[in-house]
Each structure stands twice: as C-alpha cells, then as structure tokens.
Image 1 (cartoon, rainbow, N blue to C red):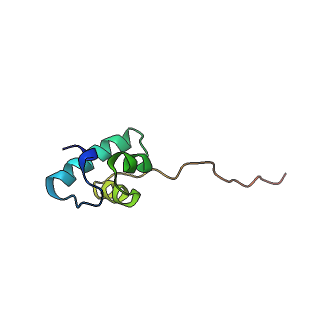
Image 2 (tube, rainbow, N blue to C red; image 1 turned 135 degrees about the vertical axis):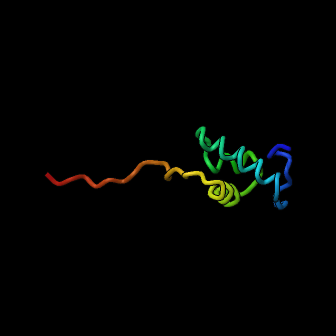
Length: 73
C-alpha cells in the first residue's frame, strides 16, 4: 500500500500506519518538509507532524531568515 492511495480523512491504523510512519520518517530525514509530505500523501500538516513525532523523529526548526539585532558600536 502506498501513501498516495489512502483516501483523505480516512483513518490509518495498525500496520498501514506503521508503514506510512516509516516512509514519512525516511523522506523527512532525507530533507523533505512536513508540508511537502502532507501534500504528497494527501494528508494534513498536523497528521504528518503527529506521525513523525510519534515515530521518534527529531523535528527540524522552522526555516526562513532569522531576525537578528545588530550590535551597537
């Protein structure tokens, strides 16, 4: 069963959830974003985030530019 074939909103439990979690974990650790994984699997951002957290993945910090204050001379 591939992640793409799951119906949106359908509950994923048992072995299917374990397989999906392993697949998501592998892709996330290779650099895919949670948002990209959610789109690829037709699941919500929150679902993917929760599954990754449940599978013990250390989540990356948010991306983008950081705001730093310039030091006064």
